[in-house]
Image (cartoon, rainbow, N blue to C red):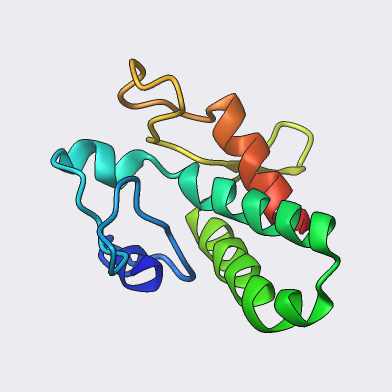
Length: 125
């Protein structure tokens, strides 16, 4: 599922990239490869759902055994997905290039506000 999808890129990404549309077994079923490859905010959405489930249930055993591995996989994906560049002041700036944000009319967006914010949130969980 999500781990094998991340590895299909060239170069491959680490961690877990969840499919935009999936079958029961978790494989990508989106008919458009353009959409399937670039709808990369989905993994962060999954992290948000995991964290919200834990916040409501306070089930630490579930978080340890089920939730944390998902959160870790998504965090690993975004760490491998960003492009680091040095700004004019010498600070490192993380970019996420070539994505389709929730506004699907943008077919190749760079630094989508939602995708970047969601990825940053996924790294904090």
